[in-house]
Every structure is written in structure tokens, then in C-alpha cells.
Amino acid sequence: MANPYRVLDVPDGADDQEVRAAYLALVRRFPPERAPEEFGRLRAAYAALRDARSRLRFFLFEPSAGESIDEWLEELRCETNGSRLSLEKLRRAARGG
Image (cartoon, rainbow, N blue to C red; front, side, top):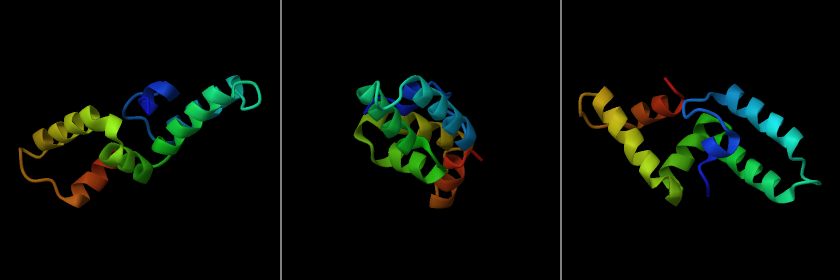
């Protein structure tokens, strides 16, 4: 899967509303009856980013996101002074907080 942030043209730290707004704007430009392949890419990208749980699932389990998750975890390690990351810290980070 292509990077969903690039597909939807949103920044990496985009919140739920930004992702939804970008998705809806692109769907208007590429409706399923006129651009079925592009619509499929948009739908898959939105499914990966639509909420915090989906974003976390994408980062943790999507094979193409390997580099992204490594960079993301390294950033979190720096923020926590190298301490071990707890599941709660990962959840807060996935929510953007």
C-alpha cells in the first residue's frame, strides 16, 4: 500500500477531521463511477487513517510502513528519554497527544 498520508495529501500529524475533509474533497474529484482505481486507493488510505485506532494498526502491522514506524518509535524514544515505551504511551502518541 502506498503511504496513505501522501495519497490523501495530508501532513503526518493530521487529525481525524483533516483526514476526513481531505478524503471527501478527493472523492468529489475522483468519484467511483468515473475513476474506480483512484477511488479504491483513496478508500484504502482513508481506512488506514480515519481514526487513532486505524492509524496505530496501520503503523504497527502494515509491511510498507516499516520505515515510518521505526522513525516514529525513535521519535517517541527521544521524547521519553530513551525509556521503554508502554502501551499507554503508544496509544497517546497515536491519538496525537
